[in-house]
Structure formats: structure tokens, C-alpha cells
Image (tube, rainbow, N blue to C red; front, side, top):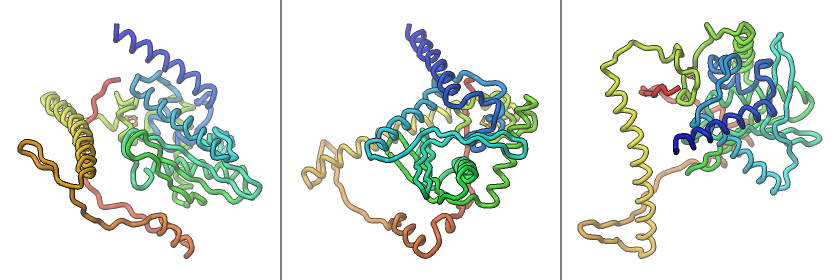
Length: 322
Ligand code: SF4
């Protein structure tokens, strides 16, 4: 009964998602969109030539983005902003049909501001991911083509249904040269493979989003040496990581509850063999907003000082369920 119930929800969400995609984005096989530029090229091509209905987890993941948009739209309307949402800009570039859809566009006689909304399930990063920046630069390129005489600036807004809330990155007003070449090249790769209906040779770009990818089976990025003996070890690793995440949440919850109680009395609390005491420690933090304002006053901006950190190893173990 419960499986049947969940299956019914999954089917309904699949239909809903297909209808919404068709209504908002049209036939995605006929153009290359900004989201195609910002994601793994192999996935972008396969999603066009071999669309999948998606499983419950990936559908909920997508729907969460729509929900964030609904909340934000209401907030903008309440704040009295003059804006449009899902504005489409279509153009052709070197024979590649291009379309971008802007989450939010704020228009005035002289200036244009646009916003791209990101709603990750994981923590919001300190700096935007490369894939997010590729997408916003691609949007910026399209907006500049359509409104060549206006003062244009794009921004990214991270929206997380969790402890992180909102995070805003502003100031995308120029497409750096290195990005410009990359955008055009990525669009061409995706378009040519879409036309020939064959993803062969299209690069795979693994990321945490591979967990939700319908095309992970057969993906060259995950073709490895077969070691069947490792299955239990890898299953344990996944299990412990999941348990670790749950434990961390529980620890944080209990810490907040006890801290609250200690702060009410202002004194340590004892219970059986335990004593709970709160103390304050300080750490130095940078006021990024003030620093950004200072740099802008002096003709610069934060991104001019942002550098990639040193490399470190990451073990990524995914379970193939599709
Ligand atoms: S599994 Fe990851 S790398 Fe492979 S196609 Fe999907 S998104 Fe791209």
C-alpha cells in the first residue's frame, strides 16, 4: 500500500514536471539554454536526446527550486519591486540556437538587474560554484546582446531550506574573456551532439549533482576497474557518512537546546554525572560587505582577489540506483 502510494506521487510529479518544462522552456531539443552551459555537457545532451522522467528524489530536488522561486516572487511583490520572471531571450550564435531564461529581471529606463536563483540541497558555498558562474555569465551575455545601451548587472542568490538561508553574490557586469570563449565552445559541443543525437565524445563533468543524475549508468566518469570485493566496504562508507550527517544534526540540536537552558540560568547545569557549562570564545571574522564597499570605492571588487585554495583529495562514493 505504502509503495503504491509513493509510486502514485512519483508518477504525478513526473507528469507535473514534464508539463511545467514544456510550458516554461518549450522543446529543449531545439536550442541550447544557459542551464545546459552550466551543467555537465554529457548530461545536458542526454537530457535533450533521451529525456527521463526522473525518480522521486531528483524530482523533489527540482521542485525545491520551484518552491524557492514561489517564495521569492511573493517577497519581491510584497517589497514593491518592478520585475518579471522567466523572461526569455533567444538568439543565434555561430549557427547555434541559444535561449536563456532569466529567473528575475528588474528593468528601469537606464539599468537592468537580473537574478539567478540557486537552491542547493547541500550547504551554500562561500563562493559561487564554477557551474553557477558559467550560467550567469551566459545569461549576462544574452542580456547584453538584447539591451546593448543599458547599465547591466547580474547577481546570484543562494537559497537554502536549512540553516544557511540566503546568500547573495552581486556584481556580474562583464563577461571575462576566458569565460566568453568557454561559453561559446560549450554551447557548440552540446548543440552538435544534440543534432547528431549522440553523446559520444561529449565530456562528462562529475560533481555532487551526479547523485541525482539519470545518466550515471554508463557514464565514462564512473567507469572504473571492477573490484566486486569492495562492494561491502563502499556500502559501509556510504552508510557511515549518512549516519555521520544524522549524528551531526542531533549533536547540533542538543547543543542548541542545552545552550539555551544554560543561558536562561546564566550558570552551569548539572545532571547526574554531567555538567554543562557555556563559555565564550572569540574569533576574527571579515566583514565582507564593508570590504566589498571599500574595494568598489577604490575601483576594484572582491572577485579580483579571489583565488582557488590549494588542492585536496575527496572520496566520492555514489550508489547507482537508476
Ligand atoms: S553522472 Fe555526473 S558526470 Fe556523468 S553524465 Fe551525469 S552529471 Fe555528468
